[in-house]
Image 1 (cartoon, rainbow, N blue to C red):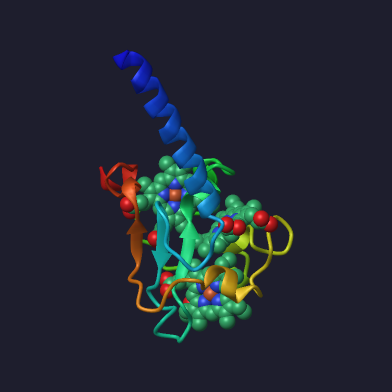
Image 2: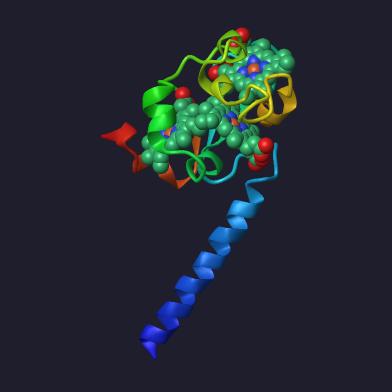
Length: 132
Ligand code: HEC
Ligand code: HEC
Ligand code: HEC
């Protein structure tokens, strides 16, 4: 009886997770596990950048970004400049109109609510290697 209930609870949690994944596709809101990048954007009158970490994690291996592209594993640790992205570095390694849509789609990245501070939103904050 107890074990059975445990199972169905787990299944429900799985369903809820799937719903959360679907919700990730809604821009302009920081969802669970999103990283907000806003060291310079808002000072330069652009909305904060929302990087949907989970959306990318299920598509690419960690080392693509954290080894090959040089993203440090700590929210706020990277100095990402727009000029570098346009040059094909950081996000621009993929957002180049080939692997994914290109840097001219400002609003798809600069989709954060004004005044959202940089940092991670959600539960992965204390678990990752970045906190060791
Ligand atoms: C693929 C995602 C992406 C796209 C598309 C994008 N940006 Fe950015 N942009 C970023 C990231 C990430 C940063 C760094 C944010 C931070 O730390 O403040 C940034 C930073 C900036 C900054 C801050 C100053 C600087 O030079 O770094 C400006 C201004 C900016 N972007 C303008 C634009 C404009 C204008 C467009 C469209 C023509 C655009 N961005 C498209 C991701 C993107
Ligand atoms: C598409 C690129 C990409 C992939 C793939 C990716 N990450 Fe990240 N990751 C980032 C970016 C960008 C940040 C934010 C860096 C910043 O804010 O300066 C980040 C931040 C992090 C952080 C810091 C969180 C915190 O609390 O500070 C951890 C931990 C992390 N990633 C782990 C992983 C792991 C584990 C994987 C593979 C399962 C992975 N990442 C895959 C780009 C990626
Ligand atoms: C390793 C490749 C890679 C890197 C690096 C990368 N992206 Fe992406 N990103 C993708 C792909 C592929 C998609 C899916 C494109 C599509 O649906 O056409 C995507 C989609 C997105 C989306 C839309 C998510 C959705 O729900 O549809 C956003 C926002 C985004 N990226 C922002 C960023 C930002 C900001 C950075 C840098 C901090 C970044 N990406 C770095 C490959 C990458």
